[in-house]
Length: 166
Image 1 (cartoon, rainbow, N blue to C red):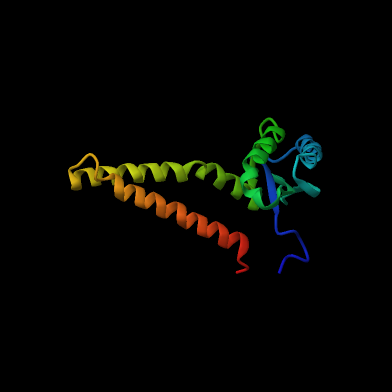
Image 2 (image 1 turned 135 degrees about the vertical axis):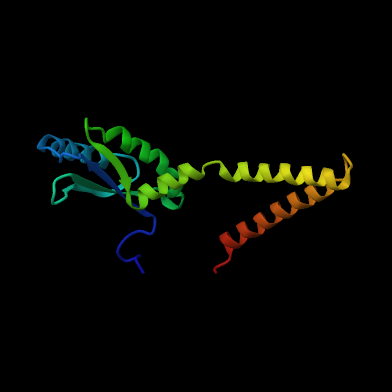
């Protein structure tokens, strides 16, 4: 439903600037100059919007929209690092929010987790099979069967996702 209004791969990212005592005019000027730098980052589409200060003057935000295509969620951690390198002001805390901030945090948190879980599970299953079969060789057949089933199911899912119009 959003297709007429924005690209489905657009990822709005909100850069939030906070100073407990309130942002100074110099802070807002720095945020404005940083918005121009954020505009020049790879993957940015449209205009960077901001700074938009809060009513109490303690917070300001700049909104930047990224579009890296279908693989955008995986590219966001690098973009988030670039934003954090640019958005530095003494005494001001900077946070990333919105869909882009959430995606960057999730990608960083779960990076490499699939492999870790897979190998930990494999080790536990091998240990249980060794204790159950009491043989240094018999555990291989169930493990090879499980690995074959995993690869087969991943291949079926890949081809369904690529060629089936579901």
